[in-house]
Image 1 (cartoon, rainbow, N blue to C red):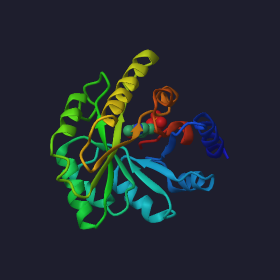
Image 2 (image 1 turned 135 degrees about the vertical axis):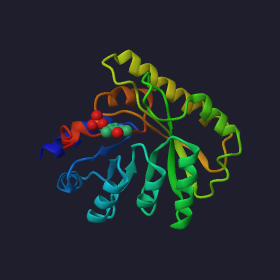
Image 3 (image 1 turned 45 degrees about the horizontal axis):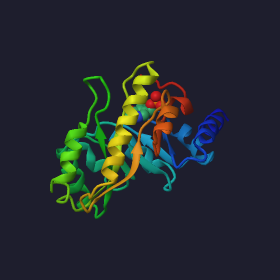
Image 4 (image 1 turned 90 degrees about the vertical axis):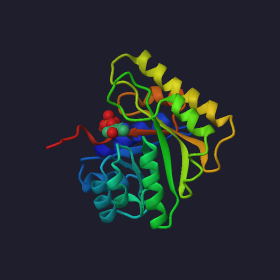
Length: 224
Ligand SMILES: *Cc1c(COP(=O)(O)O)cnc(C)c1O
């Protein structure tokens, strides 16, 4: 009942926008995912490949699985057969491996480029200049089984709402700029993935099309 109400609260906030909710279920047991599913939720986000694969095997097949965490190249094979969207492409090496695994399972895999927008040193991703450079080079065209669908970013972990807004606006600006220019054949600027429990309302105002919310739906995570 609680999960259902939490979902409804977020859905109400998103209603009237073209922003979809990804329920971030990492670390949470299947029963809670099933509960969210029974309340109508179909998009779920995970950050570990094997955890996602075992949940995929056990849960309803019309769930769309989103990989949102840093993905090691040797783990891509676990999710290649079914993953709906990989948000966390943070290197060309990873993209090359996703392409290789996509060819093996005869699929096209949709991906977002993760862009580094936060002040922290630890966040993964490309910087804006690298993304712009990639779009005007030929290097993405060689990935026959990849479809780049947009960008993903994470704001600085801070209470400073202005700082968060500034970072989301900067990513939205890059997104709009790319959208307005010619892009490689396998690139489209459709999805802008930004916003989590603490900042999804700011992200929505900045033009997010996919918010990734965990704690507000499922409660705090237990990493033990
Ligand atoms: C865990 C995670 C989220 C969800 O975070 P909450 O604060 O629980 O909403 C969103 N995005 C990424 C990339 C994450 O790893």
